[in-house]
Length: 413
Ligand SMILES: Nc1ncnc2c1ncn2[C@@H]1O[C@H](COP(=O)(O)OP(=O)(O)OP(=O)(O)O)[C@@H](O)[C@H]1O
Ligand SMILES: [Mg+2]
Figure: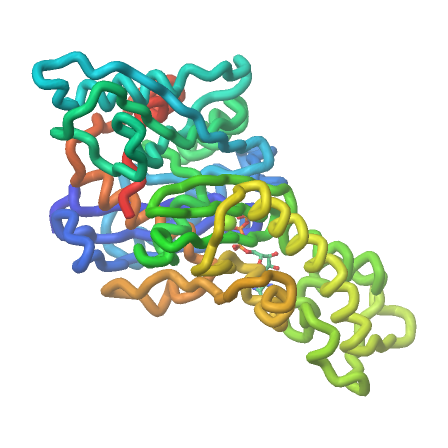
């Protein structure tokens, strides 16, 4: 297999770091094959943001080595995910006059319109991460995806601009770079997850993807095939675990075990006579018991808060989403969450698994791997797209990456 066929997705999450190696077979999306998966617990992040570079670097190295061993290849570069409460998205609009012969719209006019839409003021401590065109309007005719070749006098571009804190992006890049790995691109995690989980038709109809991890809950809304709304909330499954530890007076490890194996997000679904023994801190006192209903009440209370905040984001987007809400990320595995979400949202809800690929697909067949698999799909598409982006390597990697992210890109669906 040729080295340029290898694309690696590196999901640096609050709970785990996952390195997923894909063989892209010259970019044919039907042939992408998962050939290596490495996963390690993550300890250097809080709420999706790197707070300890050394711990993060060590975990990245471990995950990458495990994936390399499985695949029998050496990794040189990765596509990495970024998230955290510092991320914000906004839609902007740019207008230009088309002055060429016959008023035929050229690629350069499209670029001018997109550049005009980028003229928004961004504070110095923030950086543009993605610029994603949503659609174009030619002489008041809207809903145009590719205006090149059309005739018109006024060309308007609508773009979704995602920004994040420079320091957070730099710490993420530093952690990867210190592990001896180059970065080909940083991708907003829910955009990557959407690539793995959402089929094209859902993106056209209108759909909400919610990636509920350990430290962040990322919400993106797609409509007419384009990204229209982004929100990253600093809330995740770790809050549920902490609630259980607090109310039951047990260690976070015990609370995590209880949540995963006996937890339920909907009180009505559990038997009121079902009791669970819980070990006390230090294990010296008499064993205690809680009912499964009490445990479910703690979880439901927190999950109702999450779902209500997600509902607010959907409302803010002002979009109709007939394809409903797709829940992914590790917290989507919580028993009873689907039923609670169905009671909360007035639209269909499903749990999103990464779409099956070839190779070791069963190893990544969990909502936990949606971001990692999506990064491989994103990387494969970008690697073989035109115009080719330059490979980033060298010492001033931060500047190069951040500069390149200012380029707009088509969020291929
Ligand atoms: N079977 C399960 N039931 C309930 N919760 C689960 C289950 N498996 C994992 N989780 C929860 O999922 C969360 C981890 O999910 P995930 O791996 O998607 O997070 P992450 O990507 O590391 O974090 P983030 O994206 O927030 O930075 C943890 O809070 C964990 O408790
Ligand atoms: Mg995640």
